[in-house]
Amino acid sequence: MRSFTTQSHVVWDCKYHVVIVPKYRKKKLYGPARQRIGQIIRKLSEERDVQILEGHAMPEHMHLVLRIPPRESVADAIGFLKGKSAIRMHYEFGKRKAPTQQKNFWSRGYFVSTVGIDEETIRAYVKNQDAQDRYEDGNPALDLYWN
Image (cartoon, rainbow, N blue to C red; front, side, top):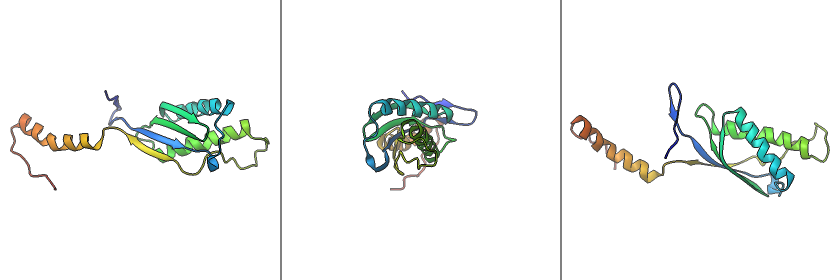
């Protein structure tokens, strides 16, 4: 069952599968760093009203299933999570504690894919919506097929 959220002017369910990797795909996410990065990401996501539905850290990448509100762009949410978590990981696990060092923890890019109704379901809904409206309203069919 879908879990829609309602606000005064919008009903939404925006879920994304995100994969982020450390710089140069180095195996940095193990031991205490693996546990701490999960805590940091959860804390930062609460600040932006982003829900973490699933999350798993492998030594060289991290999978997240996020529920991001429509007022927040995916790029802004991921940029915030990656940027702030990199700074915190640098201060906690960096070899030197100098604040002038570069705080490169994550690579520049990330993978994102929407999680939702598949294309076939949407196409069937759009195709059969006209039939449902005609049944309810008694109106004649409209010619809206662009094939």
